[in-house]
Image 1 (cartoon, rainbow, N blue to C red):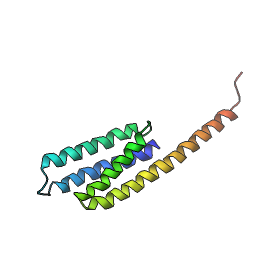
Image 2: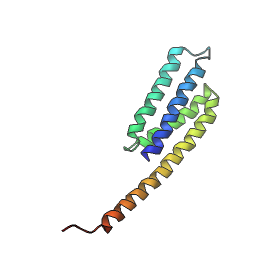
Image 3: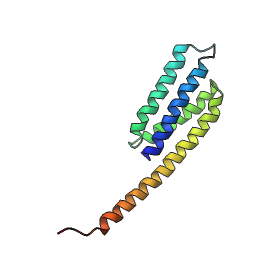
Image 4: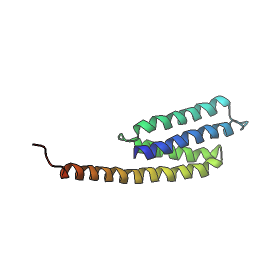
Length: 118
């Protein structure tokens, strides 16, 4: 699960950075505000790469997905990109857990089928 979720988060890192560049063009927003919010979101993406397998990591990832969709109020394209990344996040969590379960099952089979060295 960690690899799939981390890949999604790294993709989001870049999308958030590019969205910050687009949001800078809005005359109603200060550059400081745009880059503070974008920087925090980008930093959260990187931190979540390491926390995704810990308790609450997936929930924080979902919170990030909601924030990414909500950023569509500032950059309308982010509604679409946020929805795409939310779908990718779901797929990463769902299929990542299935892969982890299969790995654990194969490891258990391998350890039970090896003869004990006496």
